[in-house]
Image (cartoon, rainbow, N blue to C red; front, side, top):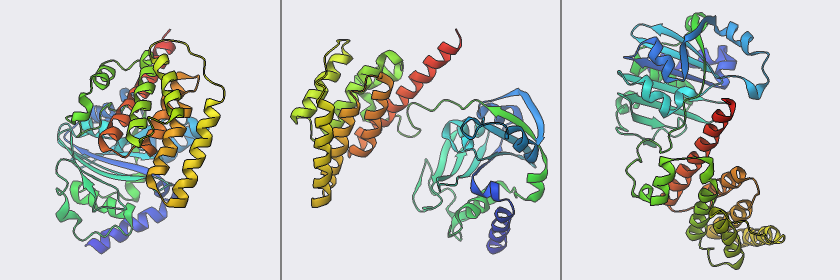
Length: 354
């Protein structure tokens, strides 16, 4: 049976090349269509009947980086099926929380770059999640929940294997007739990202008073403080906090966080770049991972001096992703990066409403 089902999905993907390149299929049981649509960030009152081909024609006039998120919904037996061609909203825990609230939801997502995720949520919580290239590395509240269903799947054909597993969970077979059908189409406003990723809410690293205060009120006014906090975090974790150039950059960021305007040495950014270049050479010469991390720390401190406060906060967060080695520090960096994004999004909404 496994060979037959796997062959079915392999051939199915071969026949639907656009779908095979990038898609997200979400199956849900226990919610009605309107609740399912709302879980994705759609408005049940603003839908239309469309085939996949009709949706493609609807989206054709858009520039590739302005194509709206769209979801096609149909019912197969007791399960709802949501299809996003070249989309990924159904792979997100923020969406699956609502989609599984009344029962269970399964999501299979992949794109042209190989980014992918299989997810199984029950009663609003993630039970199992994994990268289909590495199904042995699972996470969630019950990572072995689907182990019996996965036992004979090698995931050598990862997308087809993910669809096989989804069929085993839901009993729903995705086939040509499904894709050729008429769906309920809805355009989506993406559900805001959780500030704290699911499953780490109780981590002690998030009890820091500053982190708690930003989580309570993530606003653009906090951006200089976020930048300062992350800069110090990166400097401490990588051990560059006593480097004279790092100290000079941190002093500027300290002043900005306290609302003071300070003159920045015009050569500081250049010197930080030169120091980073030296550390890169050292990392290659000595094969020293710590030198590589210190390089990213120096680049992050340089970029945190950017005049645009939103850009400065983004760049130190981005550098932190490469520089930080401590798991708790990485979590704080991720959470404050999400707070930065939420602050900017909320400010944009307020501006658009004026």
